[in-house]
Image (cartoon, rainbow, N blue to C red; front, top):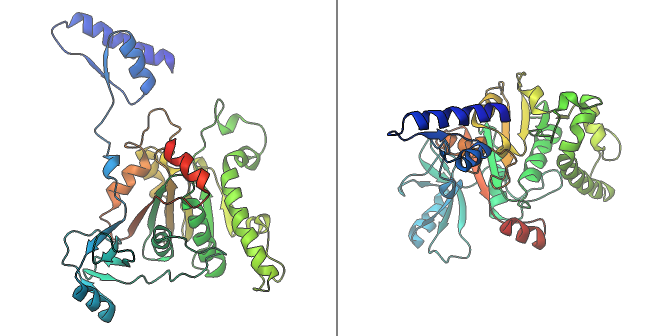
Length: 352
C-alpha cells in the first residue's frame, strides 16, 4: 500500500541522514516506489538479480549453413548427426546452403541421439479447421502435437497467432484425437479496482469479461469448422458442428481463473495459459507444479504487453520460464515474429 511504501522510503531517508558517509540505495521492483524515492532525493534501483536479457531471448530455432553434399546426405538419410555446435533439445533447425537461401529445409533436433531429423507430428494437416501459414507456426504445431513435449511456450506480438494455434491444437488433441481428458484454458485476472471475489455474480459471470479474447478465438475456430461441416466434412455428436457452449457442457473445454487452478492437481489435461507474461516467476512455478501425470502445459504471451507495474519484459514469469527451461528434454519454445492477423495489426504491434 501507499502507507507501507512511504514508511519504507521514510526509513531509507532516515538512514541516509544518519549515515552520511554511506551510500543508501533503495531497491524495489515497484516503479512507483522508485519514482517516489527519486523525488525526495533517495537513490533507487530496480531489483535485477532475477532478470534475463530479453534482447537475447531464446527463439527456439536457428539457421545452419551446410554444403550441398551435407544437404544431399540429409535428404537421402533423413537425419544428420549434430556436428554444428550447441543445439538445445527440441530446437528447430533451418538447413540452408547460404544466408540468402530462399527455401531452407526445416528440421528438428533430438538430444536423445544427437540428431537432426524431419518434423514428425505436423505435416501441413488441418488442425480443427486451420493450417500453418508460415514456418514459425509450423514449428509451433509440431511442438503442440508432440506428446513427449510436456511444456510449450509461444511468445509473440499481437496477430502472430500464438493463442489460436494453442487452442486449435488443444481441441484437436482433446476432441479429435482423444489424447487428453479436456482442454483447460485460463489467463491471469487483473481487474482495475476490486478483485474477482468482490464482484457481483457467479464465478462464470465474473470471469467472462477477461476470457473474451479466448471466446473470440474459439468462435474463429468453430466458424471455420462450421463452414467445413456445411461442405459435408463430417459431424460431431451426431449433429451439426457443436457450439462453444456444447463443448463446455460436454466437458471438452473448461475455462478457469488462475486463482482456482493454483489449488488443483491437473492430470491428463491440455492446459493453456494465455497472457502468461503477466505472471511473476513464483506464480509461474506454482502453475507448472500443478501439472499431473499426462498433462501438457502451453504458455502463450507477449512480453511487450505487461499490465503489472513491477514486471517487465525481462523479469516476468514467461520470459524467465523460456530461458530456464530451454535445456530440458520435455520442453519446447517458439518465438513468433510474423503477423498473420492483418497488415494494420502487424504495423500496430511493431510501433506500440
